[in-house]
Length: 70
Image (cartoon, rainbow, N blue to C red; front, top):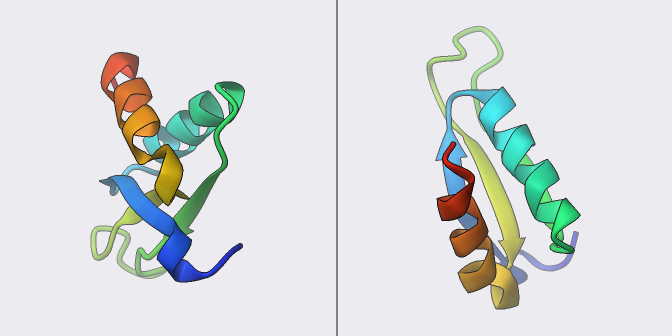
């Protein structure tokens, strides 16, 4: 992964399946996406799972996510 400055969170959830599904959709559209799971391993309700894309892809990613109805 590039420097942290190049990646922006475009979606977060406590439901891993939703984040992984959106990652797959973004990748199908040609965008690089990374999942960062910050949930506690013992208490999954603590913390969140974040979907990151490159800074230059934020607007396009947000539109794709908005259209995905997740």
